[in-house]
Length: 448
Ligand code: NCD
Ligand code: ZN
View (cartoon, rainbow, N blue to C red):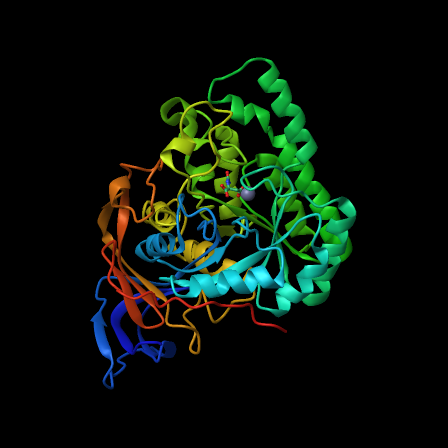
């Protein structure tokens, strides 16, 4: 189910250029890109003065369905994505039950396909007991696999080093990508006990219970495994400057080890706990100004390749109260692109870099390119159309998630998302979802 749409007179943005061009989408697929195209019966959208980017690909969301739908569900979560210019999401597997087998992968996909307002891929999980399932799940269309090395929402058992090695060797053989929550479990447990034992109850105690050595150790171990196996390795939610240095080294050595960071690590530090308390409790924790700066520098140097939201909703009750009992994570899929556009329109990074971080690299890393995250002829007609002269004010109440706790409430940003187009159909306009029926479809990596 795709639409026919001609977008005229806009400026199209790719990782390499910004230029004036029309885009003709036919049956949901980009048919032509060029000057003075004719509609031939397609609907016409005049984009004079507007920027046209490939739809965003958010490789890191937790939409909580099945099993945790009191936090979020697939309809509300994908509506939030559509309103925020994200046309493809990769959904994390720490739902209930976890996506640990071919059976669960199929079940989750069938459950979600009727409820998706954007296209979606599904991660399987690797834990200590299911390495034998990976090849089958990959065959069945999994987008990749998530590995939780440290304790976090869902408390899935981290794989042993031998399981990890086996999984990474399989990844190299089959060509799938592994995405890592990289924190050393033993160290997290040690520091948590220590800091709790001191009787601390202040909000920043969470940050001290998971210091950056936890992340640094896990990432350096993964680099060894990646070098020895050749597995495609994505370190998600990079928070620490030490990790940035490791990724710099990985890049210099030509390893297939990539980093993702998130808007909260770029905008906030642990100081934010003073204002937001446990709302900004997240794993890994918010860190220091020096870390924050090193992440921005890593974006400029192409050392961090992608930005994901780590959209991780919880109810207000689950987020409130004691720092030790509050759940980790908060929403973000609807604000990731507006926040990065603002950075571009203020001149902090280029608009081409935004496309590279939010569309191009996530698609590349997960084998979705050029069907997703590109404006190439033959790719899906997924676009986000932006007015660079207008402004956006983030108002939590207007977001589409079930629960609207966000540290970005009230932010004023440059630029405004006017339209989100999914396979040739306008699915959101000026922050509202306009497509009545969910038309999202499952996507799988291209095999080679
Ligand atoms: C995530 C969640 O709640 O699912 N929470 C978080 O703090 N980031 C899990 C995770 O990605 O670690
Ligand atoms: Zn994580």
